[in-house]
Every structure is written in C-alpha cells, then in structure tokens.
Length: 243
Image 1: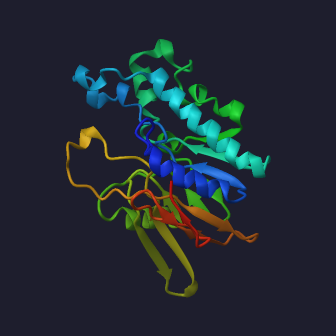
Image 2: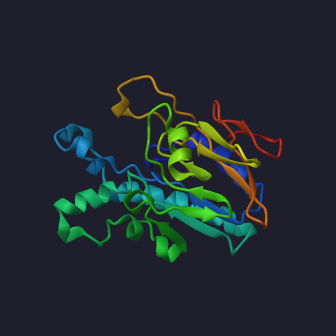
C-alpha cells in the first residue's frame, strides 16, 4: 500500500470484499508504509520532504490497520495477523544508524503501528530474510526486480514463494520431472498504491491487486489473484466489487 500513497478508491472496493467474507488470517506482505520523508534518496533534496511528517504517515497507517482489523474481527475474533517487514519499513532502521538516540523508540515501525498491542506477528523479512509459512505456501517481502524475478525467486527458494516488492503480478511455475504432481511457484502479488512522484512519469508495469489463499488441512492450497482495473474487480466468489 505504501501509505500515504495507497489508492483510497481501490481500497474501498477491496474492503467491501473483506467485509463480505469470514477470514482466518491477514498477511501484510510489507511496504505497507512508504516512509519517504526519511528516504536516503531524498537526503539532498529537502524540497522532496516538504510538508511530509512521520507522525502523520503513521497516523494514517494506524487508521487503515484499525479498519482492517475491525472488519476481520467482526466475523472472527481469533483471526491471525501477520506483518512482513519490507524494504520501505527498513528505511527507519537506516535512519536509526544516523540517529541512534531514536532507535527502539516511538518511530520504530513495530512501536509506531502498535503491532504487539494489535496482536500482529512481526516478521523480519527484509533484514533477516525470515519467511512466513502457511502449509506449503511461503511468504517473503521479495528481493529481485528484473523481468525474470518470479523465476529467480522460485529457483532461489526452491519452494512455493509469494511476495510483493515489485508492484506487479507475475508467476513462474517449476515442474518436477520425476514428480509430475509436484509443482512450486514464484508469484508476485501486486500492490494497492498509486504511481508516485519519484517515478517522474516513467513507464511501469505496476498492477493493483491482492491475493486470497485457501488452505487445506494437509498444507496444500489454491490461491487467487484478483487484478484490479479502474478500482474494481471480480472476486473468487464471482461477485463484482467496486467502490
């Protein structure tokens, strides 16, 4: 979502879909926060940081998490919540290296978003390459960005790997010669934000969307990736969702 650059109109449609169903869990794949006010890319460009405030960004992030947890807990009080650290969340760690007096204080993502209080599991995906696994599905924030990133992710991890980071939706499936019933995939799952100013009008392959995972007791799964166009999509339930 890269708050505060999430697409609020698209979010209305996604939240409609969230409200229509009961969920066992919610996995935030990382880069939920953008944190561009402390980005090293803006260090020598004060104008890029004008009127941007960490407190305001975190306030907006907390508002979205409040809303999403309320939607999910309305139907399932025991739902599981997971947050993977992305490279944008790691920006605050880089900032702390220059300002160690602030480390572990209010501005740490885990503290500023009250993740422990909320009951979120905090996964150090970007800094420690920690995965989050559900059955045979594994989640990381993502590492690679070239046009072959799903193949590289599938081959590097050697297992089903779902990730964000690239803002697009691409898949690479690896079949096993001696086990035709065994296939693992590298799958990027899109974004829920708008193109940002730093792109300066450059062409991109960003795709709005999200992932729905149906998990069987033996760990096998099916997953669905609703692609969002003009702020609307047809969900896995066959219903059209729009703001």
